[in-house]
Every structure is written in C-alpha cells, then in structure tokens.
Amino acid sequence: MKLPLIFLAALALPASAVVNIDWVTVGDPGNAAQSAANRTHSFGSGGDGYGAVADTFRISRNETTLANYAAFLNAKATTDPYNLYNPSMASDSNIAGITRSGSSGSYSYTVTGSGDRPVTYVSWFDAARFTNWLHNGQGSGDTETGAYTLNGATSGTAPAKNVGATVWIPTENEWFKAAYYDPNKGGVGVGGYWLHANQSDSMTSNDFSVAGAANYHAGKQYLLLESELPHRRRSLWYGFPELLWDQRHGRQRV
Image 1 (tube, rainbow, N blue to C red):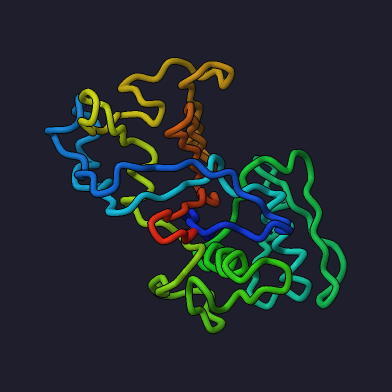
Image 2 (cartoon, helix red, strand yellow):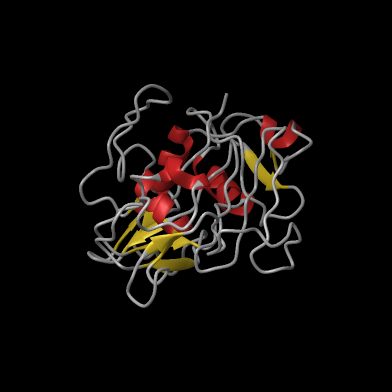
C-alpha cells in the first residue's frame, strides 16, 4: 500500500525550475500548541498538543500536482530503479492521472486529464526523493542525498531531515499550524485554533465555488478537503502534501 506523503518545505527554487511552487507564509513563530484554552470547539480536542512551531515558514498553496510529479518522473525515472512510478497512477479510475510508455532506460510519462490535480499513489520515500530532487536544483539533481540521506532505501524507518535541507517533508506541527492556526483568533495578537481549515468552526458548503467549502469521500482511497486561503488545506489519502518554506534562514522545506 502506498502511504500518504506529507507537506514539503523549501528555499527558493531555481528561476529555470520546471516545478514552481506558489507559497503562502505562516507567521507568528513561537506560537502555543492547540489546547482547550485557545480553541472554541470541543470536537477537535484530539489535536491538542499540536501546532507549536518555533519559526516562520511557508506552505504551498496547493498540493503537489500530477504535472509536478510527471516532470520529476521524466527527469529521474527513465529506468525507475526506486519504483517512483506506481501503475495505479494510470489504472485507478478514481484518480488516474499519469501514464508511462516505453521500456526501461527510455521510460516517459504523460499526464492524462488536468495536470493540476494532486498526485496520488506515492510513498514517503517517493516524496523524500522528490524533495531531494528539488533541493538539488531539479533537472539531473540527485534523489539520494540532500534533504534526506536515502542511499537506495525504499522502505523501512524514515531518516531524519538533514541539517541544511532546503526542501523537506514538514512536521505534524507545521502541517497542523498551517491548517488550523489563526494568530488573531482570540483578538488582535491572541492566537488560537479553528475546527476547520477555512478559519471557522463550521463548514459553509460542499460547493467549491463558495469560500470555506469542503468536500470529501472517505469510502474510497481518496479524501479531499479544501478551504479558503490563507489557511488552505487540501489533503488526500495516498496523496502528496504541500510544501513549506522556512523563512528564518531563507530555507525551503518539504
């Protein structure tokens, strides 16, 4: 089973980059974690203890797309020794979006349908290689070192982020803060947490044309939640999360 990937965080990507990220800043560094004292709902008490982040960072406005991941595959998976491509990316009728053609050594990848949809059927190790590739400038950039030292691993315990990483998979606290935290929820300068990622304790609609809307389908292997910026959250089972950017040192993370 392919597991869901996490957000990405990073420094500025090269001007000539194939994959360009639209970032949203999450400020108020040193904020408190969620607790009964800084939320106005009881449903989300399971999130208590999450959300404290010491630094200002950026998170991508949207999840990593099919077009982003196909660019990565075409750059680094012509032989695909690390199984970065999953055949279900083409065969799962619910979320199909990338097809592969050719033979090993000359594989090529094509997006089917809209390339703006989020990529699915990616593992943590796939995500880590994508972030290493971004860290190393894309193109022919290495996938085995950078944000993470992988050395060919495709399963097992995920290695820690390397010191000096420029693109990486974010922590649970970074993700939680980006989704739910509001630095002015309790009044100017009084931070707190919303139940939903639309800066509200209630959901307004399941129509995406309406601000604060959300839609999901938990009965299959996809779940999509979306809300209005700046705390926009879109997450999928088997999905590829957003990117983060740590501004304190001018570094990007995944």
